Image 1 (tube, rainbow, N blue to C red):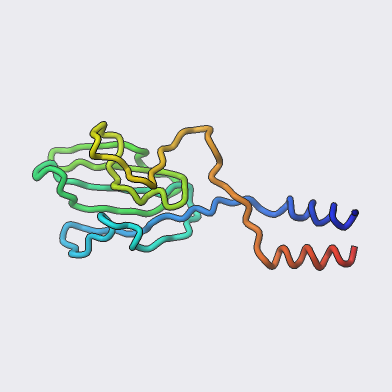
Image 2: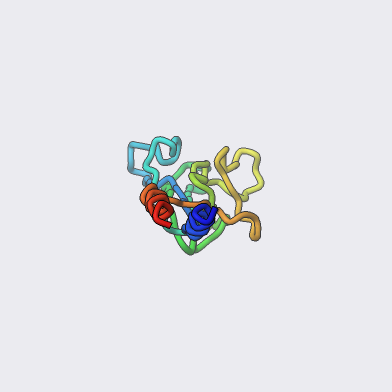
Amino acid sequence: MEKAAVVLIFASLCGFGAALQCYTCSVGEQDADRTCVDNPANTSMTNCNKKYCTIIRQEYLDPKDKVASMYRGCEDKPLHMNEIIEDESYRFYYVACQETLCNGGSGKAGSGDSDTSLGDKSTLIIPGVGSGSHIQVSVSVVLTLLIISLFI
């Protein structure tokens, strides 16, 4: 019984960590490959050690809805959180989320139009809901605990 208690104590001390995966890609207007815009699931996925998956989508105001550039990545402190900012030539959509692969949507957040959803994998930040963490225990830690329990 004491062995089980020791193993449980060691197991409870194993670290909690954010295992955030984000799509990572970028595309500019001159790039022929539009996978980053149209099909992010076929782009790179990164194990991110930062707090947010992000999307920055830049569209022309004229012609309407033409994508000038798109960036998907991860950041600790995004400059803008789920905002739309316009200047005389462009509309910028900024999306930040904290769930694995949550930056796989269109990147068009907060406009109020029905055709500008973030997509199925979108997440909006709601303070105080969830931690986005899960237990990370490596095989070596488990084996070490089992060996220690044999000698106690």
